[in-house]
Length: 386
Image 1 (cartoon, rainbow, N blue to C red):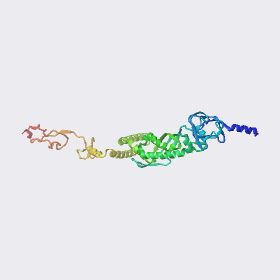
Image 2: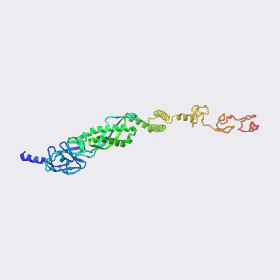
Image 3: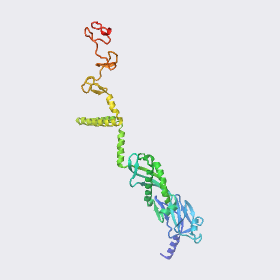
């Protein structure tokens, strides 16, 4: 390279006239403009786009912060630089400074989650372990503080460089908030939005020291341990059965349909139905005891009638005795004395206690109708006529 080429290259690299940053990434928070070893020319143009902030650092100190707009770098636009002595040679000479562009947009869909379960005391389950995860959005609220406390002298700072630290802070505040709120585990799903606002406020108290702000905080899920969820599923299944008797009948009907479609049904049908009815009966009894309690015993006693022949109790509405085969349904006859309705064959009235044996004629022994004054066979005068 000739001496003229070196002079030309030095002239091109000596002064910077336009300072701007076009962000082509999605996760860059801070970018240092490459001015190291170079000088910024007086009257250079600074272009700061929306969702950006330009920070000048002079001799290790944050000198000035520029928001969106177009600026001409001179003494009037940079009073802090002027105060720090950046313009040693007046406003006609270049100066050396570092320029950082800070991305102030919202960084969305940043994930968080509990790496280990959170131990809590719950009103329904006692001590439980909860896991949670979700997402949040954040932005740089104070570029000056962010450079001082987080970025430092990094030339390129991305969300992944601070993501782990932010997640730890979030999980700590989440655990503290959910413990203070004391919401039952089964009611947490109805409080996600309210809890998110409370936790976001707590997180911002910590993030403010980094120059950051959490703009949105979402709780996507809070889950119980697998064994507790399995127990809840069983409990829900039992509740879904509803009336155990109807469920048993439905299952029996399904068994009949399946057996009818099975060409080799036969003996298997009877065995299957017998087992099905036995299990169904046990289920019905268990559910009946749990739902009606002591009422089942009373109903079983009140819904029986004695056999008129052998006296064994039979279910109400039964036509034949299950023990002796006698007819349960009998006719009704009036009492010979008070006229109360009695079952046929009753020997005494349940109302007045009168014997129901029919009177007989003292002459011919023919049966007399109740209240008859003369025998219908021989005409002899009866006791009722005297």
